[in-house]
Length: 355
Image (cartoon, rainbow, N blue to C red; front, side, top):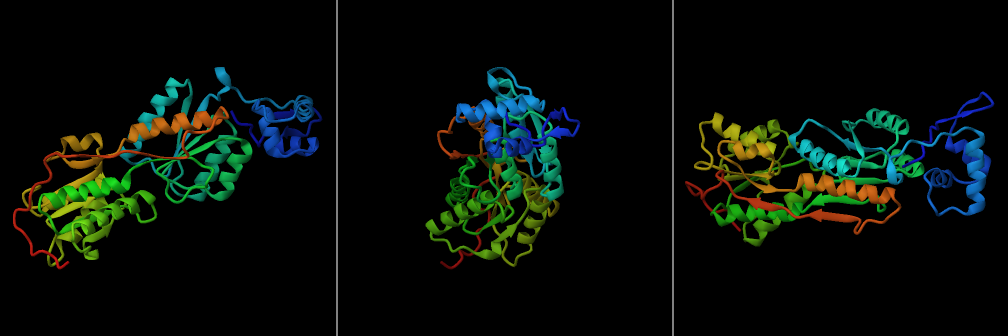
């Protein structure tokens, strides 16, 4: 449970709500020290604790509500965007683990906008929160610092960029997943493989691309940059990217889309051109979302354990809230290639690229 810097205490002198910043100033201590006292942490000297608690009582500062065991009643789950079945799988894992721990979940989307992130932070101050699970996004440094001052622990799932060294992360083995997908296509006899990558700013996108490149280079196949297009993990970008690859003078015989939704968009682009999967082109995705088992044809893809990533993030942030250290600050859960009906040997071989 974290202290709210905005405060919940009414000053008996009629001056309004008292913040922990004001309590810290009057006690002659730092804001984090007051936060530790409010949260019942043991790493405060008895003399300092007594002084701070007296000021808290004098100014009527109300501690935030908590459940049994000292945990706060809520957990914040924050996405950059919620418009994705991928997000639903993360939410499913988070809510299952939070429910088991007796903690509620508040789901928010900041859409990559500073104003949305600041509005979310204002709402966070007004409620009890065991911690924050941030998914594929980056907090402004000032907001990250405010979480630290409030004593609210943070765990990042699939970090968009390089997180702060003191922030634990949970991800998937994206590099090895990209390599497995590409090796599968190479083993089927494909030498000209197109890649629809995710946004370059995301670490997971870059790792999947690097894994694909490593598999090609390991097989002695030259990396052809004309066969790499960027998408945004949405079906529309898979549709557009696949059309761009089909318009090449020498199209690929297989496509690895670094996200299942982009793979479904690619399949639709092929269908509209009268091309069949896998007879005319093989397609591999990444995620193993529930819907791809029912696509036409069922999609070969790399399974990443999205729900398990959400569960682990919850367990980690609750450990931090109890003052415990995580077993490891950087965790990557394994990925697995799931072979279905969307891949097959190339029907008509293209000339092998020079290498």
